[in-house]
Image (cartoon, rainbow, N blue to C red; front, side):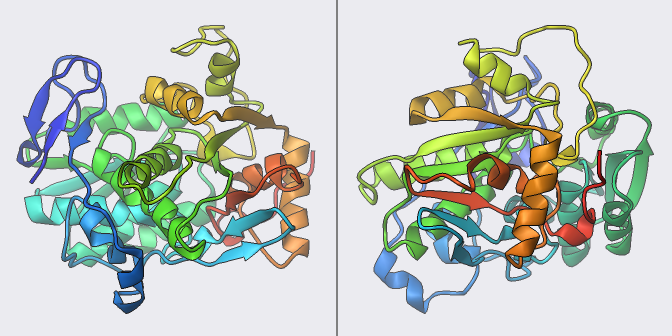
Length: 365
């Protein structure tokens, strides 16, 4: 296996140690792994899942796959297409990272797996742990959508409803993560998850015939899709498989937009304005203090991209607009369409990250 390394203090640890964070600075890990180039011409004969890019992934020959990946890319305007990642086995893009992370957990064989989530990541980890026969506990805020809670329970996971916000659920999980025999399947701290989400970009590259759009628009809370996209773009560019890197356009809800504020202030860290986050329909990206802040801001800046924010009214309108086009998407998953759905000045791809059945229609103001 590869080894973990801390991007902030250069501490290293073997993956087999199951250490969930840097023991010195308590920051998230990166992974010492070098992807091999993918041969575009060979892909038509491969398995029809994200595992077709096996040489670019840090684990191979999975036992827990549910056929995830290879979601449709659908043009909705002359310049903007949407990728239907809500058509994953658990109805969200989080399956991309969860399958890789759960495959790692299966090989390490812990006594228990824990995760924290606002719903979709926890559902994905619960499903793939069920597939792997691993005992799983998921910590979620007590205000998590009822349908998401029901889905986690349906997969047989133990559910811990934590009073408070998304950060309170994360803190509870991190406390439990230090118990012996525990594997913390953190989609934020563990880089194997990012190596799963980077397959989103590999699929775009394949579907567009070995190219990428001018802009890749992604919703950002903890930044797992954005950082995975940056990772995939970097690999394709390093291998000479794309000539130009697309701009990364990061989208946050206006009510919880700490990264957007820091980006536009030219800061490398979050600004401490002391204001508590307000409730938002985009609960899946309502993250007030993402642990990978520096990496997220750097990735967007280096790509020539930017941060956009959307209001609650724009989220409601975007969900109805997509539904009128035949696509029922959860309220978090429509944020990028709200921000970029009517662009005409560049080609762009917008992810539709979660199915509308998870949350229902956003309530009126």
